Length: 349
Image (cartoon, rainbow, N blue to C red; front, side, top):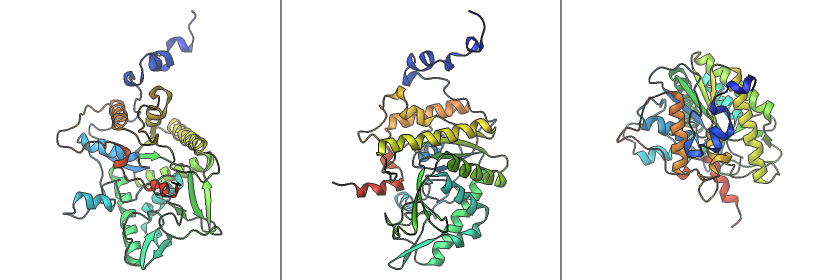
């Protein structure tokens, strides 16, 4: 046959050879990281629940993970996790949407901006609207709430300035805002904290332009803090717990993941400082036949997590294996801190 662009392609470019014949456990050369990284790059991790798998895998393999806001010395591990220490590189709690990420980068760039973040009061305790579950009982005063928020904002900045790679896992397109101020909320007011007011609180389902614009603004802020930082984007394969869109939740999940995947891929193609790793495709794609989901069809089993991490480190070209005595990846998503799961309490019995 005459030469043409397809006749010169590697096996990895053809579905039958690279996917169908190989099978999910035989996939190889899935991802080639575009970055020129040091032998032991440092990672900062943020985003949805699934991002925690990456931070644990990095630590399990003895690579540097940036913990810019560690728990106070002597804090028992179970207490530290209850207060969201050691979950992400700073105590941000889950960051599900790109507007949330943009807001955190804004605060990291200027921690004085925390004075404008909305606080919720109940029973003399206070919670900030960006991470209402971060303190199990809330903060004791407005001053403490703002001081701790500023501490986390500075920690985000420190993590960005320190890391070779900033990992951000995109999780949702649905969120809530203040109708007039545009204040971003981590959770719908009234679901765990705060009081819902339909005249004040408005639902947003961020479309492709809004999702991309917010992520681009966030990345510009990251590079102002650390021009040499590289950004690795992933899309969480975990479905939404619930949707406020009016669509069936199955359709809502497809809509959200399509937008997030397209934004992540397009930004990766547009910048040599951004790359995309296909964790979503590995777990939720056709080749896996949903074999890595638990019976709830949402939680990712340990075998799926292990497969994703195998391909992550293969693509990075880092020759490491899990070190004895290091913390292993969680067995299921039930081991993760996942604020969105608070919505399950509103399901009918």
